[in-house]
Length: 141
Image (cartoon, rainbow, N blue to C red; front, top):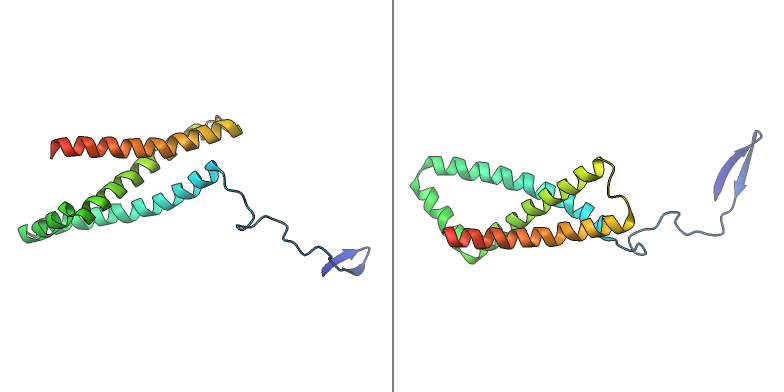
């Protein structure tokens, strides 16, 4: 039922079509740009939490050698290495996505084909950067 005011009279219009006016998640088709946009927001939140944890980790290192040994044991485990790799991917994705947004802020890259290409470049570029950081870190440690 829809209420409409027309020439000082209140008219009640019964709506026959009860479908939603905007598409919702069940019928919306996903695009690369929407996936990158949502992932950019999620990785931003993750990176804020990670930066906070890195600050806490640095403060724990100041408290003594025992704390360092515990954290070193954690980071050398399989789970710790997975977490470090995930954090590296998150930062890589965030940086590349920020570069993409910076270019779009200058007014470039709004064509459908360009957004698809830059979105895929951000996704695959972050994976490639993570692998490169892993290989460089593995050779130094």
